[in-house]
Image 1 (cartoon, helix red, strand yellow):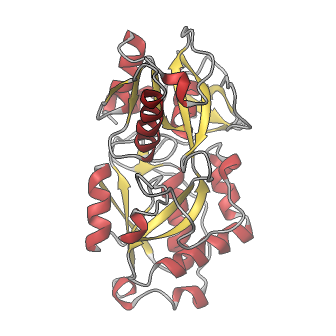
Image 2 (image 1 turned 180 degrees about the vertical axis):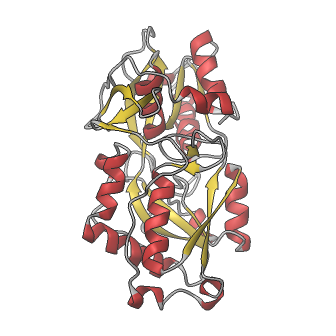
Length: 330
């Protein structure tokens, strides 16, 4: 995210989140005054702390789990965690110092590091480089809204920690009322992130429409979410398909658009799951999953999700390498 976009997060939110054709969503209410006299967003009735001093929810070390961490990871006492540096609130985004990365992903990573008895060492990169760094072992684990897929499981191990929901965002004054099936995007100008699972779903929908004799969608790609928002506002794009939490947060804080549908990140036949990602067979995924189950059990996990208004994306148990998004073309 651009620095200007990050600063825009401090603007008052004048609109409540309006949702169509979807279940319970994060409860995001209008902003309240922050302690420094500026306005800050409020989620589930709580004013969000957007500063670098996050006062994160913390957990206690569990020796029986910490002892399972591979020696190569544990020897320096640190857990190197990869996050996207581009910014996508409330997942990961810059604090008000434009440097510190905050959000639900960083909070959950902190809980895992605590249980493993390690100091978290955050690293940021582009979306694509997160995968390269995890594959090489440069990042010991990635917490960045990564959906489990069968193709990714060939190269990485996964420990789940949230359900994956995607959302369709349109301008406030759009005539589009609902997007819930392929025919709803026929002939539309739509945007999606390159290399993402939502892109795979969108391309499959477009293929189905072409086979059915419907008009193809015009798919437009932008590197930054801020550019997508400008395209929606100007009319260059009629709808955007992206992570539901980020869209909901943007609508609550900035207004001017609405959600017209949600969809599982794994497609129509499987509930998508978000997971911590590690290098394949490096021995770290099991203790990470056990750490997640520890904080799920003691309530710390719920505290973090509720803090960011994502309580509805909670899972009852972390799984290692569960069924993921089907292989492309399968």
